[in-house]
Amino acid sequence: MAAEVIPARVRASPRRRLPVETIQAWLFLLPAVVIIGVFKVIPAIAAFYMSLFKWDVIQGAFRGLGNYTDWLYDSALRSPDFWRALSTTFAYVIFTVPLEMAIALVLAYLLFQKMRARGLYRTLYYLPYVTSFVAAAAVFVWVFNPQYGPANEVLGLFGIGAQKWLEEPSGIFELAASAFGITLPAWLAGPSLALLVLSLVTVWHYLGYQIVIFLAGLSNISQEFYEAARLDGASERQIFTKITLPLLSPTTFFVFTVASIGVLRSFDSVYVLTNGGPLDTTRTVTLLVFRTAFQQAQFGLGSALAFILTLVILLFTLIQFRVLGRRVQYG
Image (cartoon, rainbow, N blue to C red):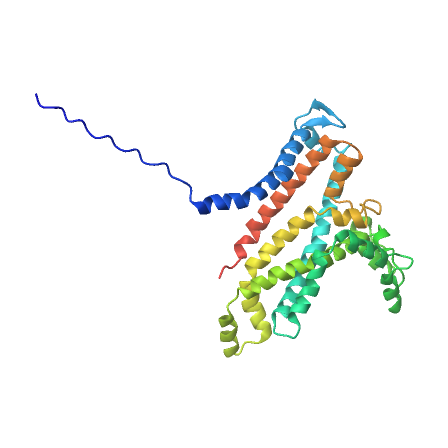
């Protein structure tokens, strides 16, 4: 009988080892992942859990979505505060973001040109962004002081009366109309002068960041487009409107999105300069979250309001991508 041939064993393939570069990449990412997890993800999960309960100092009864409906629908209790704070927040965005972007774009375009001490000018414009806002706010409180602030002294040079600035609850349209002896109805008064001053200070603080982003966008535009346009006899205005602005649209869209989100969730500027006053005319949603959770010790309601604001920001961002994202020209 012939000996049975036994097939040789197939040697098991060795386990794949992760490349050294992949391991190094994960090790570099590990500190950021840990920090984001500990200070962002875990607190967000805890806040959502708290928003489902009647949570004052200690955890109370389960409410489900009751805290959310109190803010959105219960007009006798909470919703007037929420809707007023939300309208103030969007007025803050409307005053701040367009002005911020317009000034940043013009300055970035000028700083992109060849000039002496260009690096020095860029540094000077960026300094406010790296300055502590609390320290800067103390200076602006003095600047806009209604008794001895330099702002009123400058107005006096032009024959304009002193203003209360950060202490003025009257609407800007109402103040402008009263200067001509016109009385406007309450619904036409407009946001308060204090909110306008708050917007101007916010523009001053974040202007340098946006200038840097616009400078990066301008540097990505090929000089060949400008050379060809100048050879064809295009003016500088035509070059700016027909070449620079369209090719800068991805950067503009990014800046608009980031700036809008930043202003919607802004807290420190409002808290330090006005603390929501005068007469709650500068009380934004973030400040309402702080007051509800940490001053009134209603952590369940405060957490619910924080998540409502998150959904508002998400919806606003999606609308931006839907409406403005189509007009962005890439290349």
